[in-house]
Image 1 (cartoon, rainbow, N blue to C red):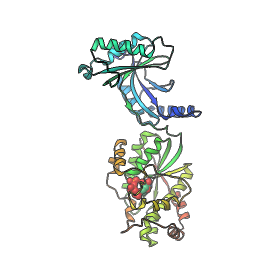
Image 2: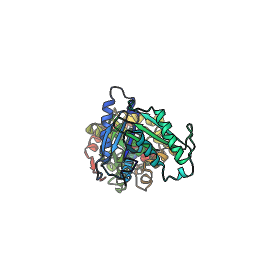
Image 3: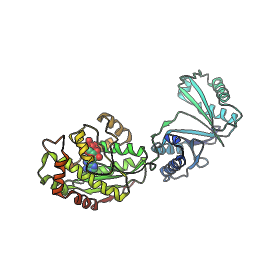
Image 4: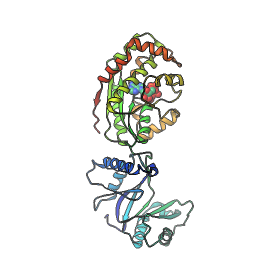
Length: 400
Ligand code: ATP
Ligand code: MG
C-alpha cells in the first residue's frame, strides 16, 4: 500500500553553501544536480530530479514504496553540497490532504504513543497558497493534538512535523539526516591526492572533495622491494572514497628503485624529506598530465618529524603547484574520528609494508636545510627522475 493518505514517498534535499553563490549559482546547481543523478544512476528504478526554489526534490516511479526512498536517501547522503536529506511524502496542494497525511505520518509511532511533545512547522515556497504558514501550523497542529493528545511545545519539541508548500505539491515529513555539507564536487576544479595507506591522507582527500575538488588518487609503492599490500590498501581506500564523487581513478608509481638511490646517496637523516620532495616533484608532473591544479597531502603540523614547520617549508620548496593540507591544524584523534565516520579507518588500520619503512633512519632531521636537499637532488638528477617516475605511472581501474 503506497497510495495511502500519505501520498507518494520521495526525497527532499536542502542545499548548503550553494545558496550563497551569486552569479555562479546556476553553475553550482547544475553541477550538484548532475552529481546527484550520477549517485543514483545504477539503481534499478528511475529517479526524477526536480529543482525547486532553494531545494531539490527526488521523485520515484509511481507506486514506489518507502524502501526506494531509503535507498535514494542513503546514496545522496554522500553527495557533497547537501546539508539535509528528508524522506518526505508528496501530497496534493490542499489543506485537507496535508492534515490527513500528517495524521497518518504519526500513526503507529512508538514516541507518539509515549506522548512526546511536538510542533508543526510550515513554510511556503509558494506564497499564493491560501493558508499562511501560521494558519497551517495551527490547523494541522490542532488536529494532531485532538487525535493523539500530544502536548504542543513550540520552543523545544521532541517531534517536529514539517510541512513545505511548493509550486506543484506539498511535502510532509518528520526528522531527516544531515548531509555532507560543503560544495558540489567539480565546482572547485581538480586535485591530486598523494595517498599512502595511512589514516590521514584519505581524510584529507575527503575534506577537499567536500570543498568542491574532484580528486585523483596517487600512490607510491615500494615495489619491487615491498609486497603489493600497500597498493591493495590504496585501492580499497580509493573505492571507499568513491561514494563521495564517483568516477574515481587510482594511479600508482613504483617507487622502490628511486628510494634505493636516495638511500645510496648516504644522507641518512635527510632521506625521508628527500623522498617526500621526490614524491611531490613526481606528483606535480602527474598532476600536470591529469590537468589537476593542486596537490593534496595528509600532513598535520608536528605529527611526525617530517611535518615540522621547517620540513613543511622544505617540501613546499620542491614544487610550484600549491600543496593543500586540509588536516594541518587537526589532532590525530580528530582525524581518526573523521576516518571512522567516512568509512576509511578500518582499511587504513590493516597492516601493510609502507614504502617509507624502507628508509626509516635512526634519527630523522626535523629542520632540513633546503640547500642540503638540493645538493642531494643534483646528484640524483631529481628533476629527470621525477619525469621518469611519472612516466611509469599505472592506472588501477576501480571496480565500484
Ligand atoms: P598518512 O596517514 O596519510 O600516511 P602520515 O601521518 O603517515 O600520513 P607521512 O607518512 O609523513 O604521514 O606522510 C605525509 C603525507 O605524505 C601523507 O599524508 C601522504 O599525503 C603523503 N604520502 C606519504 N607516503 C605516501 C605514499 N606511499 N604514497 C602517496 N603519498 C604518500
Ligand atoms: Mg604514512
